[in-house]
Amino acid sequence: MKLVGDGARLVDATGGRTLAGEDLAAAVTRAGEELAALGQGVLFARTAVDVDSVLRYLGAFEAARPIALIDPALDADVLAGLVERFRPAAVLSAPEGTESTVPAGYTARDGHWVRTDPNGVVPHPDLAVLLPTSGSTGNPKLVRLSRTAILANAEAIAEVLGIDADEIAPTSLPLHYSYGLSVLNSHLVRGATVVVEPSGVLGRGFWDAVAEHKVTSLAGVPYHYEMLRRLKFDPEKYPSLRTLTQAGGKLRTDLVAEFNDKIRGAGGQMFVMYGQTEAGPRMATVPAERLAEKIGSAGPALPGGAFAIRRDDGSETTQPKITGEVVYRGPNVMMGYAEHEAELAHGDEVGGVLATGDLGYLDEDGFLFITGRLKRIGKVFGNRVSLDDLEQAVRSASVGIDVVAAVPAGDKVVLFAEGVEKDTCKAAARALSERLHLHTSGFDVRPIDTVPLLASGKIDYRTLEAQV
Image (cartoon, rainbow, N blue to C red; front, side):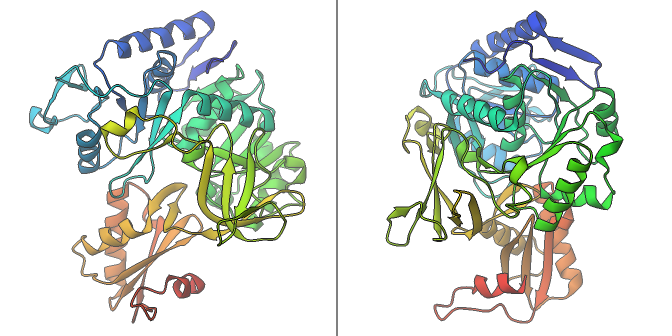
């Protein structure tokens, strides 16, 4: 199976060009041939929302050249750490700078950093795509996704959303973000059209492109829907728009109901989805016709997948109303993680089984409901972040905060700072915004007299979550 199906089109909304048929195939092949000429190892690609980035990704996939999609706004020190740990054959679209900014063992060539030693670890032949786990914080691991996983998930998403050659989807999300990548994959695999427009849902140019190219669907994370509500978004202004999809964190149930009513009133449908990067990335979708009935659910597993609930004793069940860790099985599950170069050569280490770290239960119809997290991971506007890393970032930001506790709060993070004033909290939010390149509103830093502790001396996060 190919990732680019017959009839697929790429529309460059800013450049005014369209690639389809033989022209698209030739452009993908050229991109793959250029990448194949580089030395051994994976490729790092700083992936913007533009046609060149899409062609490079598709060329790597066609040429069986494993590629890691990297946020172009990633902090220089985090990128340097990744390069040191994984020794990619090249960093494509490398940051601009002087010769002194090029990592040791690399040379600047045609806008890229190319490793001077052509020999490196040979990646496993099944490996296709690598995505970082934790945004811009800490030292992210890379999720190893096989060609089979990418294709299986693209087909499953296309099936449940009813994507066919008539669909036209815009790039409403970054392409280095697993949700944005899945929109691209699931449309191209069915021979549909993808309109590449970089300004995003809140940009004027985006909505001009929606109207001009008669876009049929819109994908967004909870933050997007919060903003669209403030902007009084009306789908009836865009007659071609007939599908809304939402993932990247749990959307407030009142907003699910509101946008479902809006799009249904315009003759369309809404799908709420659930996933993780480790699942390539989608695992579940609520059927549009049952969304109103199943408000708050993540839906049943995608075709080919299955959920189970792991109890505290390690046993698994599919009985309804039993809460435990959500376990997913499917062909789209990752091969495993990689923390350094040698692990890129490893094969499948998880056998299609993903312990999600999410707490939840199944209802009588097999619909999943998520109730919490086992691990300390939050989301800011759909971007996964380590809460522990955020705490460390605040402490090291030189704003005068020593004791801080971070807890998830839907599509943002609340951080309680002990014994400080509100101005200090604002400074901490700005510091996090600058480090992660996300809006300050995603970091709600609040003063607190004393951070509550458990008897063990550890922070009582559950009490803080209850306050949120």
